Every structure is written in structure tokens, then in C-alpha cells.
Image (tube, helix red, strand yellow):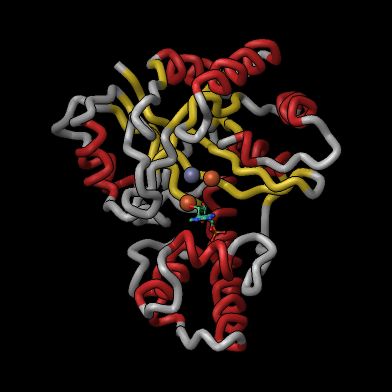
Length: 279
Ligand code: AMP
Ligand code: FE
Ligand code: FE
Ligand code: ZN
């Protein structure tokens, strides 16, 4: 059987409730999943409760947007329990930073002639990590853009007309905080990184040297030969080749839990290897 260590629920920008994510995953079937919402662990208790009557294990995770010398990276942290702790407490301030940024994005949109309000955006959010995808949904619901993708392309994407930067941890801080919280980290969808002048491999090495555990080799959007190649790089560098679909429900059409675009298989051994890296 297989696992899926990268999943979003409506606690952040996925469209399914955490219990639905668990039910769908169990029916694939998968032996284990990690719920990895952006900047929040608030979906974990509901997801954990949903595993009680199902033959599936839930790993508590979170996805962080970090900076490494000007390079933007998404980092997955696993085995982070909900509640308080070094990383958990920092998530609270990261969500507060989102709030400030969301207001700034809405102001920009208003100045550009898109008359949406925070109330409109909140109608598209069920959880506590609110961001651009929910703003995109509000724009689409008002008929101002076609869909989420259109909103990112025309307005909200990095460098777009209504784009606003936000508070980020550095990659090193994220790894330290996750480790202090008893967790392990993996670089999400490494091929979406724009490494600038430094080779991707040297970024992996730098971060491995400060405690990074893995890189996400088995990913929906990676063609099979890239998955194999990244798994080889991980093995060379002494990192775990992790994997997951990054399913966001209908927020990312065509990507399904466990199978991604239909050909994803993340072996059970990935989770066993990650467990061995726990501090
Ligand atoms: P935020 O966390 O508010 O900066 O929003 C980033 C999230 O928006 C990502 O994690 C994706 O889920 C989503 N996203 C980013 N780019 C796009 C895109 N081009 N189309 C649809 N969703 C996107
Ligand atoms: Fe997302
Ligand atoms: Fe991501
Ligand atoms: Zn993700």
C-alpha cells in the first residue's frame, strides 16, 4: 500500500473538511496520510478523530512558506502536535501576519477597481489560515475572474498587480523550530523553487547541514523520471525522498488524494524512514 504526506483541508486552502480528507484517503486505500495545511494545525483534531474507525494513520503536519537568502521555499514539517510549542507558537504570529497582508491585498484590489471586502473573502474560508486562494475564490464568486487559477494569473500571483509579500520564517528557523517541537522537515515540491544563481542541490546540502530530513521527490506534478532523479539526489545527500499529492480538493482540479494525476505512488517506507529521523 501507499501513503500521501502532503494534503490540504479547509483548515487552510483545501476545499474538503479534515474528516472528509481522511475518509477519502482511507477509501483509496492508503495506510497513512499527513495533513499539511498552510501555517495551521487546526484541522488535525478533527482528522485524528476521523481515523478512529478507519484503518489509516494520521501524521500531524504543516506546510510553511520560508525564505532562504531570497529564495522562496515551501517546507513540510511532520510530527508537530497541535497545541503549544516552539513552532506551534510561531504559527500564531504567522497567521496574524497573513491577516495584515490579506487586508493589504484587498486594499490593492479595491484600488484596481475590484470591489471585494474581507467579509466576502471570509465566506470562502472555513479555517484559520486564510490567504490568496480564498481571495481568489471571492473574486471568482463575484464574477471578476474565471477561477482561482485566473485570479492568480491576473492579479494575485507572485509579482502580480495585487501581490503583497508576507512575513516568512527563514528556512533555518523553520528547521530549528520544527526540530525543537519534535518534528522533521522536508522541502515541498522542490522543482517549484527558483534557486537563482545557486544550484538546487547546494540549497538541499545547506539545509541538510542544519537539520533538514528530506526532499519531496514523489510529487503529483513531477514526471516519473524526475521523481526517480530526485529520489537519487536525496539518497546521495543522505536525505529521505518524501512524497505526497498536494491535493487541495477542488481547489486544484485533477489532483487526487494518494494518486495525484493518476500515476503517483508514495511507498510506505517513506514514512518509516521519516520516523527514524525524529529528534
Ligand atoms: P498564500 O499562502 O496566501 O500565499 O497562497 C499560496 C497558495 O495559493 C499556495 O499554497 C497554493 O495552494 C495556491 N496557489 C499558488 N499559486 C496558484 C495558482 N497559480 N493557481 C491556483 N492556486 C495557487
Ligand atoms: Fe495551498
Ligand atoms: Fe506548497
Ligand atoms: Zn501544499
